[in-house]
Image (cartoon, rainbow, N blue to C red; front, top):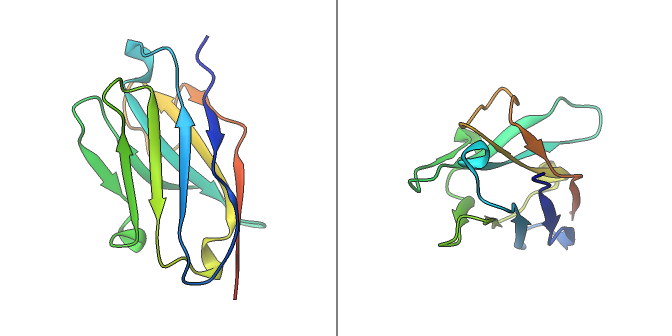
Length: 120
């Protein structure tokens, strides 16, 4: 059973950076795509970024230039580098993995989430 496990969340001031990590092990056909989603208080969950087994990345338009997704060579750990953070980035960030990069949220496996709080 694949269970994504996130780490790296926390609290930083606006303008700061955070790097989230997620272990998705073992690598199987069912987790060829790994990604990050987030849900802010009172808002719907939204896609942040995804990366597939060929290394192709996709980042939400509103976050391009500030957020970067990457994975290790073993394709079992996915990272989310977040820079120039804004209070609006405050949310619980979820790691997910699936057969393909489903931005509607239909990924096979989900982590429990890691909270990120940005203070102004």
